[in-house]
Image (cartoon, rainbow, N blue to C red):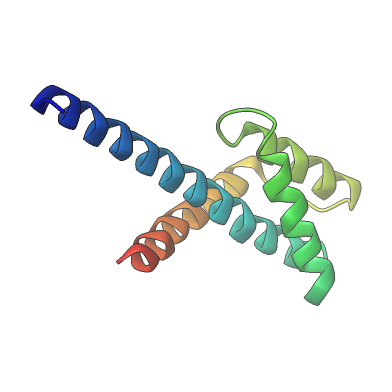
Length: 108
């Protein structure tokens, strides 16, 4: 194997690792955010966990978090709650920061 092949293989492994980390962070973020929304919807325990899983699954529809925000916005509106888009974005940002922290700590 040549040095070029070694470098190519190392790059491919790093790319695959980075993609997995990104996926894990998004999934954890969606779960944390889903648990936060579940609490506002009056859910707890197994119901809150099931709702958080729905939020995680909704994130598989398209890149980014627009699909997650659409899902929770519909649920929030369905319950007649008044939570602004600004507040949702703040909480999503908090969940993302916490998810990154948790995944990086886990990987250490």
